[in-house]
Image (cartoon, rainbow, N blue to C red; front, side, top):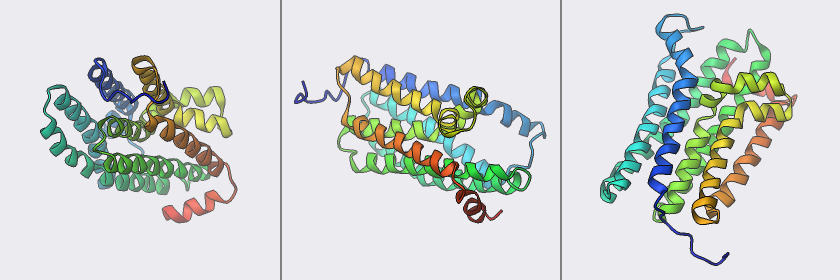
Length: 246
């Protein structure tokens, strides 16, 4: 079995991958609805800067384009899929820059009142590093559809840390606290569950795990360990404040 070629397509693929993206849409809507509605009602802690507004539209655009890409594949429009794929990739650097920029604005507002907030800055840095790495690998391996697709889905999982954290992170925080493993649990439970779904689907549909997951998932999990170690270090908060200009 170990020498068998990984099947590029399976009859269930289109349905599963579309369902996967719609699950992420649900997380975004549930996770961000309270804060977005509060902003519309003028009840936010601080006015949304332009970089935060661009950030919201860029991340929403990423999910929209993922749906479009999967639908094009389902309709057999491979040429359109490849052409529109470059538009999706143009969003990636915008997502990275605006995600870090939006967190800088958040750090400047909250950290003077809550000094421990400076620790959190490591999370979006690691999150965007993982996202960027997965997208870059997906571009390099775009001629291998099975690998390309799985790397893009891993990238999407990494990009949605905040959505799941806002959805159920506070509940997990109350259960596990903010220690080494608690920080990982309340920040990364959502993306880790998504990765488990992706790996589980390969096992069910193909009886084996794609190499993109065999390499990518352990690296992502290792990045979470690094993030928590930095988060709990004594040297990180003052450096975080300098980086954010607090």
